[in-house]
Each structure stands twice: as C-alpha cells, then as structure tokens.
Image: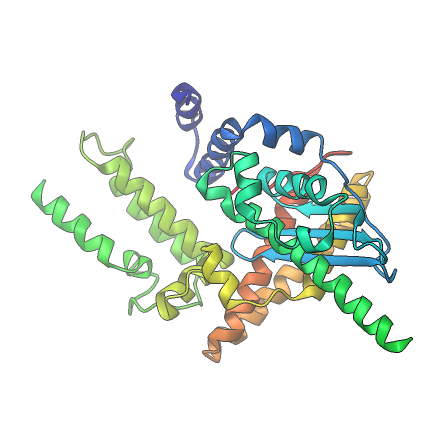
Length: 165
Length: 189
C-alpha cells in the first residue's frame, strides 16, 4: 500500500469539523486500492442489471439487506417451469463495490443453471472468485441470501399456482 | 508519563459518555444529548490535548483522535443509537452477523429502499434531487423522533429495529449528497 497517499490526506490542513470527512475519504481511497481487478471489472461493467416483472408467475424475487452496513440487493430469476432452468436473471444493488460485484457475478453464475443447483451455491465460491478480503465476506453472503430468497419466492408462487389449478 | 498511562487505561474502561462530564453529569449512557453543550465541551477538551497545541512527543495525537471519535459517535444520532444499544444491551449493530440475528429483513422496507434509490439514479437535475432529499430528511427526522420514544420507553427491541432502518436511510442521504448527473453511487464502509 502506498503510504504517501494516506499521509497526504491526513496532513491536509483541516479544522476539527472536517476531520471525520477526511478520515472517510482516505479510507475509501485505501479500500478502492485494495479491490481485486475482478471486483473492479464487475463493478465498472456489471452484468444483468435491471428488473423482471415481479408479478409474473415464473419470476422469483429476492430482496435482502445487510443491516450493519446498509447494503441492499434485489435479485430476480425467471425460471422455465418445465425444466427448472434459470433462463433470465436481473439484479439491482445499492451498496459497496464488493456487494455490486458479488451480485453481478452471482447473476452470471446462475444463468442457465437449474434452481436445485443454484440453491447450493455457497458464498465462499463467490468470495474466492472475486478474491474478497475477510472484511468483505458479508457482501458475498448477501448475494447468497439473495439467490436463495429469489428461489424461495419462485417456489412459493409455483406452489400456489399448482394448488389453484 | 506514568499518570498519562494510568489515565489512558482508565479511559478505555470508561464509557464515552463519561469522557464528557459537563454534558453528562451522571455519566450514565443516555439518548438525550445537548449537542451544543457537547460541542463546547469537546472543543475545550480537545484544546488541552490537541497535538498542534500541546507540544509534546507523547501520545497526545492518539488521545486527540480518540476524543474526536468519541465526539462524533455521541453527536450523531445513528452512531449514538448504535453505541447506546451496545452499552446497554451488548448488541453490536455494526457487526453484520449480530445485526442479522437481531433484525428481520423487512421486505417492504427493503423494496422501498431499492425503489427510492432507483429514482435517485434516474434523476436528471437538481430540482428532482431536492424532492428526494426533502423526503429523505423528513424520513430521518421521523425515525429520530421514533428513537426518542423508543429510548424513553426503554423499548430496546423497537430501538434496535428503528436504528437499523435509520442506517439504511442514512446511506441514502450519503448517496443523495454525492449525486451527480448520470452517476452511480457506491457506498464506502
């Protein structure tokens, strides 16, 4: 890590009032520097951003949040009712770079997968692929929660529609 | 030197409220704060330890930074609520695992957050931003009033969920402040 960047930030003349803002900006520079190229790739060029019709019977929606950091992920899957294959997937994430990259990578991973297999994806798989540092593991956890919630929503919809017909 | 070490050890055992005896005479963890009094006392204390003022090679810089941190925790509603809950209930809402166990993911709240954030991304000018900012400021105000009530009634279960909600909307406030046309927002934490 380049310590000169850190120091130039801290040594900037400030009044008391601006000290915390300064700390925040210097730490964000450090965290940006620590991002792995794969994270930066998914962050600058996120895959499958968008929404699907949440009222459609073959669309499952998962919305999850991390109360500690305030990140929120919405992940939607469109499933082929016959084959159980995820044919389309979209996400929207409000959060840090790692959360955006984790959900983007998750959408790439589950696209074309059967829901049974998608359900088994562990956050460690995402963390490993994106080389997330330990402090960012919870971001991959949130992406795992999101796909599970989306599958659960899809299954509950399917359950009610089959019951009705 | 020795007294300073002793003093520092003693300080680490103290709650942050006890660092400011003029603002919190009984030293008990509490929600209500006279922020102008706190700011005044902070400045007085800082004047005694600030490395620019005190010309010593010792640990004043460290002390000054800790004091700064303490002041910012106690002066800001979100950080103060999180700290108070930690002091009184031992629940650390800044720890992801802990806060996940303590709070239910409220789907209505979360989809509302996504929607508002989306409208922020779609904003094209300052006027549209002003509306979202105004709405969010009202939201934050209401949540702080809710915390007034929760802490007054000693209802920590409610205070925990209100604090979590306040965290989400405080993030939105950050996003609003950093908004520029066509930009995407990234949280840093």
